Length: 237
Image (cartoon, rainbow, N blue to C red; front, side, top):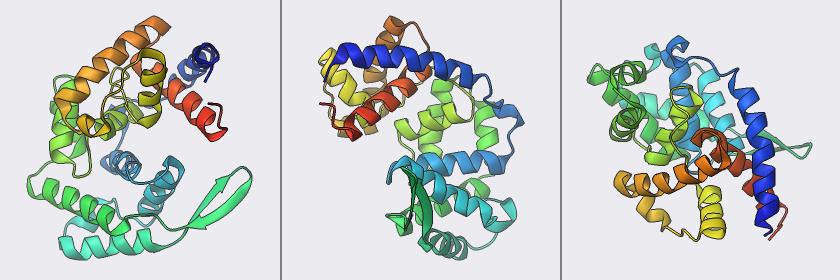
């Protein structure tokens, strides 16, 4: 892969990302239901491609399953409702064509989400309370990893970015790791990134990369994610 061309594309996309970031809603203005929807996108994206994760989360939201009234009762019944919603085909458009697919690991995802919401309910906790109580983005991420089943450091970082809480946490997915390996000779084992201390070590390396580009961590890794994803899809290796 021509890394000079890759870096040039990342720089161009960073400018576009910065323009779009101006329209990101303040997390303080989001309802708990809206925050839960974003959490679903991030949780599901660890098990399926991003477009499918967004569609699956949207289907759960549209069924009203993220309203507090729906998970006040039995956790088992709520999980069954989630499983039913995730079992229906999703309409996914790519390259002008619509495909109908069923999410992978839907039973596991239904269990993770049901456990998260019923546990937070029983503890008098919520995503809004977590975000308000945290003293920093890193503290918020640490709490989310502990409180949200299915969240590792990557998913928690993505959630905090998507809701507009912080743009300084790196979302270290396979596309970002590929860049670090090819451009910087950094080749961490993906399994190590499930542990927060190991994740933060690689994140520190990425923060130096972002500084070289002259943009925020969130701006650079989103631009890098798009660039590397397209390059791999088109087999530009």
